[in-house]
Length: 267
Image (cartoon, rainbow, N blue to C red; front, side, top):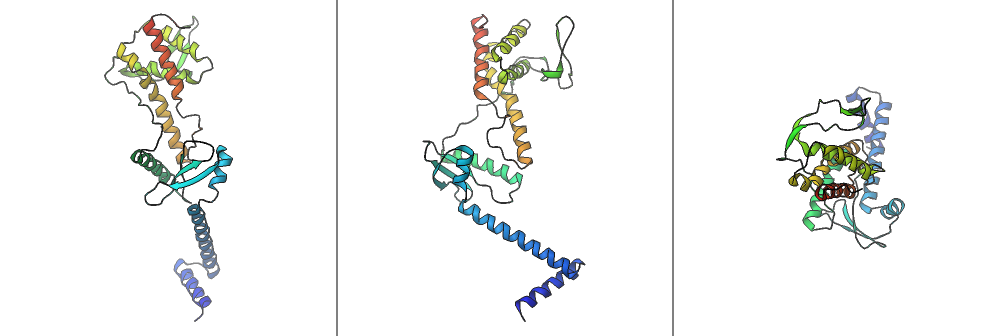
């Protein structure tokens, strides 16, 4: 009994079980073996971290000095010390053929790991859902095609299907947040405040919680963008447009609070 003979008999048995010809079963077996070989080679490269230094240089223009595993089980989470930067980075090397859901789960595990080991990281400031603040008839859809301007210049909100009674701060915070990426952000912010304060005067507590309320909508769109990217097999790299701009949010909130507490427009 030769090794080749045993292989042929195994292929014939598979052909009979699948109801296909010997040639078709042989081709299927060869494809399966090739797939396994590719995966084995990929896993070996993954465990050796092949190309990590080159990838960091091509993508981020930084040079890797040392790599240390952060995972207790020896998985794909590493501390990367850089030759030209004082603060180390954390890298996750995704295993070959990893599913999008697995990648998202591992991202969460990284955050938990960093919290446990006290690794320095910038944490997100909390978004504020405005619970307990004064309520009014309000709508979150306060921009773009949801605003019509009449012949006499009056702005009118349309599309109220998502409107209702709720914290009034949430809507104006979303409107202010829309100015974050505007080239004339200060002008837009002042215009919003000039119009809004003709009808409503925000309470001291609302002003204290304005920055948190402004973070709510960017956090929602960031979660949506992250979910879409991961679902499409494109793990975010941090440069996507949908990441919240914390500094812009803080600057707008400070401008509004300064104007309303000083009592004079700050133009």
